[in-house]
Amino acid sequence: MSALLCCAVVVLAGCASMPVAGDVKPVDASQPGDSQVQVYAVAPREGATPTEVVDGFLESMTSDDPNFMTTRKYLTGEAARTWKPSAGTTVLAKAPNRSGSSLYDKDRRRTEGTYTLTGDQVAAVDAQSSYQPLAPTDYSQTLHLVQEKGADGKREWRIDIVPDGLVLGQSDFRRLYRSVNKYYFATGRTNGRSTLVADPVYVRNRTDPVTRMDTATQTVRALLGGPTNWLRPVADSRFPTGTALKKGVTSLAPDDQNVLKVPLNKKADKVGRTACRMMAAQVFFTLRDLTSARLEQVELRSERGRLCALGADEAVEFAPDSGSGAPDSQYFVDAKGHVGRLPGSSKGTGDPEPVTGPLGEGTVPMSSVGVARDEQSAAGVSADQQDLYVSSLVSDGELAEPVVTSGAARPGDRLSAPSWDGRGDLWVADRDPAGPRLLRLVGGKGTPQEVTVPSLDGGRIEALRMSADGVRIALLVSKDGRTTLKIGRVERQGSEEQPQVSVEDLRQAAPQLTDVSAISWSGRSRLVVVGKEEGGVQQVRYVQADGSTSPSGVLPGVNQVTAVAAADDEQLPLMAETEGDGIVRLSPGDNWQTVLKTGSSLVYPG
Image 1 (cartoon, rainbow, N blue to C red):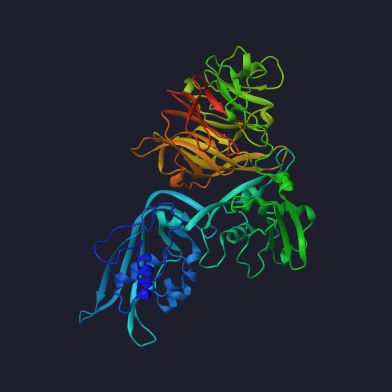
Image 2: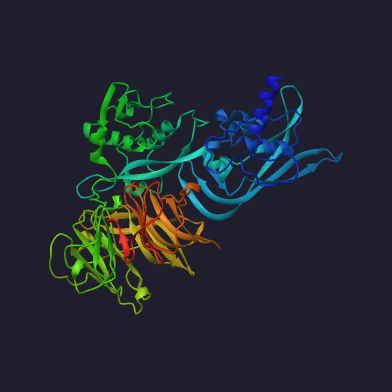
């Protein structure tokens, strides 16, 4: 009796996603984000109908079936041998619908069957584990079934034509996979140092069915594979080409001293000490957020022994968020158009004070401000949004002549709020309909350089925020009456002293939001976004740089948000400007609190 009960539990667990009888309806296997739910693959029963075979196959794909061996039992021998589940993942809004048709012989015996899988595709994950969000797109794929003779001589229905990869509903995808950041070094140097750039990918939450690797090992394997195609033009790995984990390694975990030892193949044998330490830094920051215990040291090893080790204190030298000044301070424009500062406001102890220099007490009122990450200088856009000024924040003096002037007739068609990257360069968009431009000022001074954006496709840049690493830019682009969020890759060609800069390969970052009104980077590979879904109300939520989202990314409601500000350090408060409550703050684990009743354009450095 107990054995039968156990079998019943397994079968029920395996029926969580797809129906096997009755009307065809999309059914999610688990509650969104519930990674503790586990689905078990069940082999096809003897004499299973074509519909049962299709449903069982789709259901089995949502399990942790080792090497998908049980899943392959729904396929013919040849299809089972050639099917490649790791080729990529199609993510649908719901579990796929299926409809079928059959062919019959002259005696009305069914000889073959065709089933069409349909749904709304919302994302795709490629073989590099890179996520690509999509506006809901019609999905349609075909499964073909035939009768195949088994070892016992009986004929059973099996799938003989099947697309490579997995097809999952969104809730199953969130249950089975998690987002992780790999780290690579940006090409060129930022302020004399090599800068790490986050490259987000998705790996299995538990053990990968194909490789049998745990999550940490999958992540290191992905890191050794190099940057994803989108990031590759602007980032490099310090691991020699061909470097891989030692054969047979499926588990990586820190020892009782919180030291993580990573065994590599012989391709890494000849690396020098400097390169090895940079390789260790890539592993350290890639795995830092994956381990429950504090990671104290990464040790790289090869067949000839230890190559090098990098401790947590030494890793600070390579930290992707170092060199950002003291982002505990926030800056804003007061009711008179002067730039002010909220010092130490993460603890709620700072009182507003004017900044040093002409932006703090000058005669030209400002509408927006951007502060360099070293907090030595700032850029302000005049109240009429026509002129961009750059001024020191550490010394007094007269306000210099504007470095950029827009010729547009309407204020709303003139200059956007400015933003500084981690290299110390200043960026601003001129929205003049007669000649819209994206401009960059090296070091915040000199002649503005126009930055080309080939894939704007007729859209206009309304706002921008530069990432701290300087190789990614978040743009609000308006087109056809809607404003959407796009992420671009900043490429620099030519000499380091006078590069030709362009923004390439724009990709949609929040396709579910049809109107985005405000953005800010929040950490190494995440943005906070204010926007609306089709027919919905305004929401404030987190979006990954690859465009992926999670249900937990939606933040507590706050009314009529017009701007947001977040820091490189994700533990610092999120700030928002509202129409009714002034400037408000959201600290981790707390509710929104009013900081200033008046003021606008609140920003962290950057």
